[in-house]
Amino acid sequence: MTTTTPKGRTELLRPDGSPVRVLVVDDEPSITELLSMALRYEGWQIRTAADGRGAVQAAREFRPDTVVLDMMLPDMDGLSVLGRLRRELPDVPVLFLTAKDAVEDRIAGLTAGGDDYVTKPFSLEEVVARLRGLIRRSGAADRRSDSVLVVGDLTLDEDSHEVTRGGESIHLTATEFELLRFLMRNPRRVLSKAQILDRVWSYDFGGKANVVELYISYLRRKIDAGREPMIHTRRGAGYLIKPASS
Amino acid sequence: MTTTTPKGRTELLRPDGSPVRVLVVDDEPSITELLSMALRYEGWQIRTAADGRGAVQAAREFRPDTVVLDMMLPDMDGLSVLGRLRRELPDVPVLFLTAKDAVEDRIAGLTAGGDDYVTKPFSLEEVVARLRGLIRRSGAADRRSDSVLVVGDLTLDEDSHEVTRGGESIHLTATEFELLRFLMRNPRRVLSKAQILDRVWSYDFGGKANVVELYISYLRRKIDAGREPMIHTRRGAGYLIKPASS
DNA sequence: CGCGTTTCTCAGGAAAATCACAGATCCGCG
DNA sequence: CGCGGATCTGTGATTTTCCTGAGAAACGCG
Image (cartoon, rainbow over all chains, first blue to last red; front, side, top):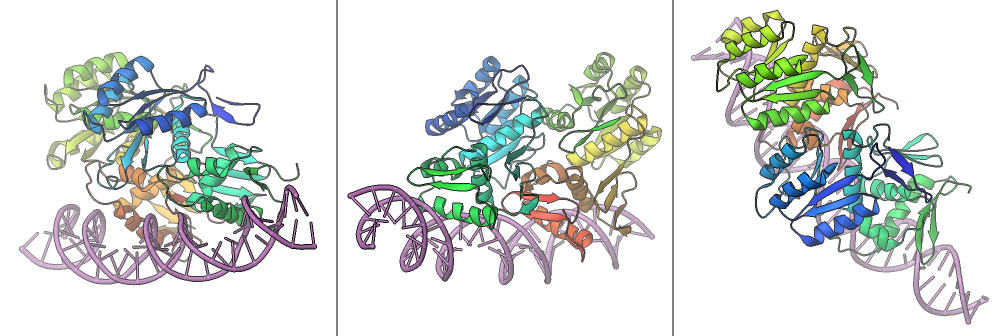
């Protein structure tokens, strides 16, 4: 089920109308904190655990709808934790966090059941998007909630990664796509460069804030080219997207 | 009966609209877990058992539409289990799991009655495809549900393994066929290399994700050669297939 | 056992994406 | 109207990702 808040944000809810519950398992407090903040902001209920033992117990008590699981835990290896979680929560999809390099070798079978993973360092937009996807597809939320964001004549499909304006298909790079998704998930709302940087770029990004301007510029060329602009600058404040002519 | 979800996935249902029920029998928890995840994702209801005794009991209670049966069980040999299962479930088709080498001899005779088998290590695509075939042919699901996938002018017949584009027949190797089937069962959806690997390659595959690129390349030569391409790369995300010109 | 086919590894090169830098442009304000 | 900070964008270096040829190993089959 989805509802739309007065501000235009859509949020996922469970069929009975209660908030989605997410268990976050990672031993680095900075990560669990970062994720907690971001996921609470989505309107979800969060519980955190720092190790496998705590994860299993939290799973038992908290009965989450989905789990974010770091594969690198201090007390037991990721696969054992996964096994025990599965015993507690057979139908709950898991989003794995893995180190960038450890990826290739053995994510075996992990995505087979509809699970998913992101590599560290991740961007919050990516984690949120993937969690939304997992929840949506698992049936914990109403299945009819679909994967298409619409603002005016602009559409963005999170499954096919397809973006269209006025029916015309538009090709975006991965970063452009995430930036546009973030804008479109917050239509008519001014987003500061800092917010955008924190959300769309990975948490360890060391570069200049100028990249936001740069990518806004890229997006405009592709989205607004020739047409009535939908992406607007609020000098000294940030950017916002809204339907043309309003 | 088949229904089509909003996302374009088709799922098998029983004539009364309830989900298909599958009993999975294997003594290795990692296998039952892997299969449970994958088969649940197909929208089926799963029950597992770890030995012959449990299998018979589960059969009696759960009344599955089909059974996945490891022929190597701890308590009794495969044939006895099969016999007792048959007494409980006379008309239910069975998918045998067997070790790669111990195959040919006796299994061949067993499949005469409409059953089927796959050898360990298997790929999930293969298991799912064969189960779908068994269910379809057994009449547990509506018989009209057919075995041909169609995307644009590309067709793939899961029964005859025939592939055509624009009417022209195309010869694919086994791996190419499974990859294309997976793509075509998820048209217009971006599939990551990890997803593809987990689904199309066997669960013990230790190689690099580069094989996916390689086989995509093979497929393109055969499917897209000269024509308008249907297989598309989403850099940093994965691959997807969709009808040409859209 | 030998041959053709299939599967897979490896590595070079091509293509695309990301980002820093810097000069151009815009805007609000005095 | 002119200034200064904020924003925009062209250029090109760097990094990442992807494609594909060549060949080795495994397999299937007669």
